[in-house]
Every structure is written in C-alpha cells, then in structure tokens.
Image 1 (cartoon, rainbow, N blue to C red):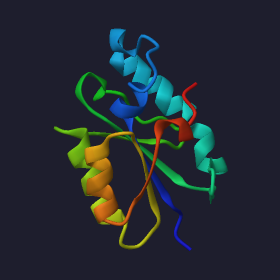
Image 2 (cartoon, rainbow, N blue to C red; image 1 turned 120 degrees about the vertical axis):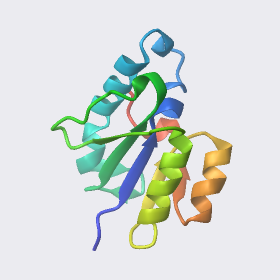
Image 3 (cartoon, helix red, strand yellow; image 1 turned 90 degrees about the vertical axis):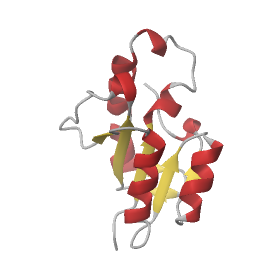
Image 4 (cartoon, rainbow, N blue to C red; image 1 turned 30 degrees about the vertical axis):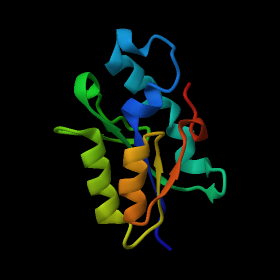
Length: 126
C-alpha cells in the first residue's frame, strides 16, 4: 500500500495563530517544519502513520530548507496554492492525499482532484 501524502499549506497554517509570525515569516515556517516531524510516524486523526509530509512555503518563507527530519519543504515559485494544487493533481490518482489548510478556495481546488482537507488545528504548531 502506498504511504499517504499530507500537504501542509505553510502560509495558511502559520497565519492561523497570531503569535507574531509576521515579524519573521521564514523563522515561523521553520518552526512549523520542525513541529511537523512527529506527523511522519504518528499520522493524523483517522490517518495512521507513516505518512509523507510536504510543507509548501512561499514569499518571504521561500528559502526555508528541508532538513533531515523527514519533512520535505517545497518552495512555491509563485502562488503556494498553485503549487499545492499541482502536487495534489499529480499525487491523488495513486494515493491518499490530505491537505492542511483553512483556505476555502484551495479547499475547492484540491477536493476536485480527490484530496481530503483538514484545518490547521490538525497539525502541531510547536
């Protein structure tokens, strides 16, 4: 069985909690990347691990690198939503894909490709 894919809308998840993220967007995205590590082994509610986790970053957070913690960071060359939709379009045909976002427009786009959508509270923030 293919490992499910969890795609995290970095800008949307980081922005879902007003903790001062706007002062340093790259650092906030790096903290999220690191907080996502347990999801790889543990999964999400109703989605047991292991799962592949991809964090999509954009704008001032675009230079956040992947680390050896297993979370793959994808830097959107333009719109993060477009990059997420492309990842889902490519992946959803052969495996379960869950997108973490609160963005209604993105939700509509990715569910059209067969992805499930869950809100930002489904992933750890720290």
